Every structure is written in C-alpha cells, then in structure tokens.
Length: 94
Image (cartoon, rainbow, N blue to C red; front, side):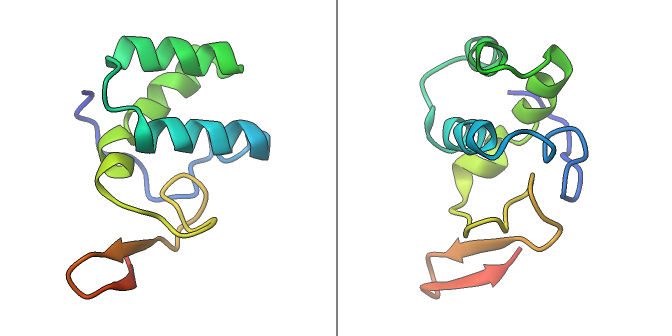
C-alpha cells in the first residue's frame, strides 16, 4: 500500500467527484481487501477518476479499511471525521 499521509479533509481533488462516484470510491477503499493497489487504482480509473485522483484515493486505503466512518464525515469529504470506536461502542471525532 502507498505510505503517504492523506490530507485532512475535505480532499480538494476527490471531494469534487459526483456523489455516486465518491460513494463507490469510499466503498471500494473500505471493503476491497483482496485487490492490489494497482488493481484498485485501475478500477477507480474505470469509474472515471483521473490517474492523479486514483493515486490520491489509494493514499486513504488503510484509513478506510481500518475504520468505520459516519455519513459524510469521512476523511475525503469533510474536515470533521466521525469513526466508530469498537471499545467504547460510540462514534468519536477522529
């Protein structure tokens, strides 16, 4: 995986995507654990992302795969991030 620290959202390059495409991007980042970064990157470009956008999205892959995010309070969409804390059973500001 790419070891680049993602920006504090909203991500100017990705947050401008159509909501349905951004939903698909975040779903892929959250749930595709089997594909390589190259495969995910190609899938994202097939969705309509530019190569630069796909590479940026991959920077968030670990963050999305390790946390559950609430609504639009995600690393890409917002500067306010809410994630589920399994220990407390609560959503917390990340």
